[in-house]
Image 1: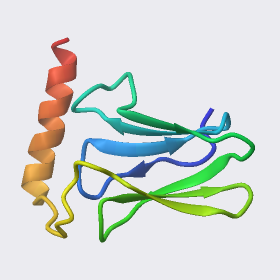
Image 2: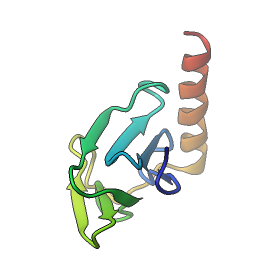
Image 3: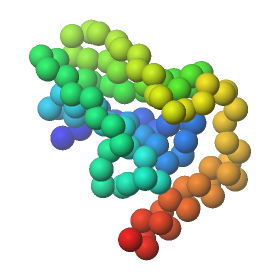
Length: 103
């Protein structure tokens, strides 16, 4: 059960993050798998209530029910501020969806 709305990654159209009521934050990339998150972070004693991708760096900002804010670096992502073009983003998303339809 999701604790908050999803946030879509601004550096990749196929990536998004979610926070769950069971204390879990999942990072998804549908170009890799639409069924399983590519990374999961579990919190004990507190529940993540919001997730937000940084627009300036490869990081995920996580807020919790106790007022804490954590910034998690997303390894393997460029520090570049150059975002893909709208056309490139559409092509990546269509390619990822096509790959899933053929599995």
